[in-house]
Structure formats: structure tokens, C-alpha cells
Amino acid sequence: MFILRNIVLLTLTAVPTSLLAQEAPIPAIAEACASCHQLDRSEGNTAHAAPPLFYAGNKYRQEWLEQWLQAPYRLRPAGGFFADHVITEDGIDSVDEASLQDHMAVDSSKAADIADWLMSLTPMDDLLAASSDYQPGSVSPRMGAMDFVKFKGCGGCHRDTPEYGGLSGPELYTAWQRLQPQFIVSFIKDPRAWNPDSAMPSRGLNDGQIHKLADYLKILTNED
Ligand code: HEC
Ligand code: HEC
Image (cartoon, rainbow, N blue to C red; front, side):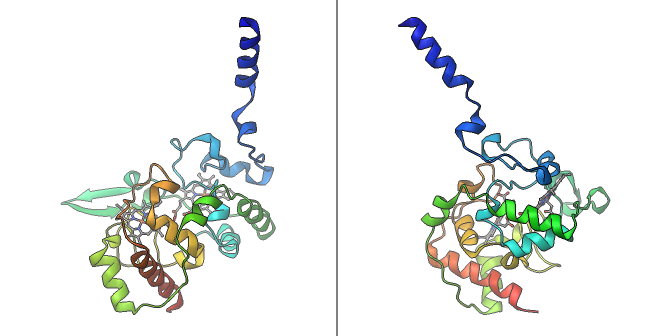
């Protein structure tokens, strides 16, 4: 019995976690990305100074990914890890632009292949399905901005125009082009369900309030 139990234990511990999680192997075209980004769910989150990509297929719009990878523009005004790139003088934060690096770019055929592969990563289907069904609606730009900045406090961390807003979160004036609408509502509802280390608080907003905020992000893109 004793020997048998040990054999069973040994067999169990010898199975690599990557097999248990049944992740597909990272293809050669994406190997360069793995040095900064988390591409595999089982890998843990802590050592990364770049946004996780292991649920890319639950988050991005494919057309956006393909274009951005060819001509990346800055999404976080202060880079991947905010505290490394912000200087505070007299209580006012500003970005140390010289310390920021440009993101690597790839050619169009590589971008298409990488985007295809990233879109196949959908471990969070259940989480998305659990969020409230969102039908995009409309909101006036003035009311939307007031809600975003004043009432909900989103502007403390996010920019809703290139000139205005916080530095620690990704800009949101291109969020509608970048993100799937259902991801937007699910993330606002419970950021830590997506990223246990998220700096974004859950404000306990109800579905109607969340849908209004998503509608505001939508008009930021549709406006010129
Ligand atoms: C040297 C580190 C590094 C490498 C290598 C790298 N990235 Fe990034 N990536 C970053 C950082 C930092 C950001 C955040 C940039 C920002 O917010 O402006 C980022 C942002 C992104 C984003 C947008 C994430 C989001 O939701 O805000 C995507 C998509 C992305 N990278 C894909 C890739 C792919 C695909 C590769 C490989 C071809 C790659 N990256 C290689 C560091 C890296
Ligand atoms: C304390 C800072 C903070 C506040 C306040 C905040 N966020 Fe965030 N938000 C972040 C950070 C940081 C991220 C990047 C993802 C992460 O780190 O989890 C993020 C990510 C997001 C994303 C996903 C964007 C992407 O490209 O990944 C959306 C959408 C979003 N926030 C909307 C909002 C809205 C709407 C509000 C107001 C209700 C809000 N946030 C308030 C810090 C904040």
C-alpha cells in the first residue's frame, strides 16, 4: 500500500502544470513577446511589466491587434509600470518621457499571424458570459464626461482625451476600437476577476451605470 501510494503521488507530481492546464504551446512567432508578456495562464502574473495577453481573445478586437502590432502607439501614458516613469515635483505628477521605450513593431504578415494566434486564447469565456448582456446605447458627450470624471472618478487614472486625465491606467479614448464591448463591461464590473493584482478598484456599480460608462467610451471613438 505504502509503495503504491508513493508511486501514485510521484506520477501526479511529475505531470507538468502546462499539460494539466492544456495550454497550446507558444508558437515561434510569439516567442519574443513572452519575455515581457504573460502568454500562458499557468505562468503566474507577478514578474511582468507588461499587460497580460493570455486572454487576448476575450479582450481585443482582431483588426485593432493586427494594426497596432504593425504601428504601436502608446496606450499607457506612463508606460507598462507607471511608478517607473513618473516624476513627482511639488505634488504634481509628470511623465519622464525620456525613460519610455517604444513598443516593438512587426511586419503585416507576422502581425496577421500573431493576431490570429492571440485571438485563439480565450480562457475567460465563462467570465464574459457571466457579465450582464450589454447593448450599446447613447449618452450625451457632456453628461458622459461629467459622469466619467466627476461622479465615477475614472479620470483620476484614465484619459478620455489625449490631453486630459490620469496617467496610471491605459488611455480610454481608443478603447472602443481596441476592446470587445462585453470585455469593457465585465472589466469595469470586476477588474480583479481579470487581474488579481489590478490597481483598478471595483466600485460596486450596477449594470445600468456600467453600461452608461461603456456608451461614453463608444462615443469617444465615434466622435472626431
Ligand atoms: C520589451 C518588452 C515587450 C516586448 C518584447 C513586447 N511587449 Fe507588448 N507591451 C509591452 C509594454 C510595456 C506594453 C504597454 C505599452 C503601453 O501601454 O503603451 C505592451 C503592450 C502590448 C499590447 C497592448 C496591451 C494592452 O492591452 O494595453 C499588446 C497587444 C502587445 N503589447 C503585444 C505584444 C506582442 C504580440 C509582442 C511580441 C511580438 C510584444 N507585445 C512584445 C512590452 C513588451
Ligand atoms: C486607481 C486607478 C483607476 C481608477 C480609479 C479606474 N481605473 Fe480603469 N484601469 C486602471 C488600470 C491600472 C487598468 C489596467 C488594467 C489593470 O491594471 O488591471 C485599468 C483598466 C481599465 C479598462 C480596460 C482597458 C484596457 O485597455 O485594458 C477599462 C475599460 C477601465 N479601466 C475603465 C474604467 C472606468 C470606466 C473607471 C471608472 C468607473 C475606471 N476604469 C477607474 C486603473 C483605474
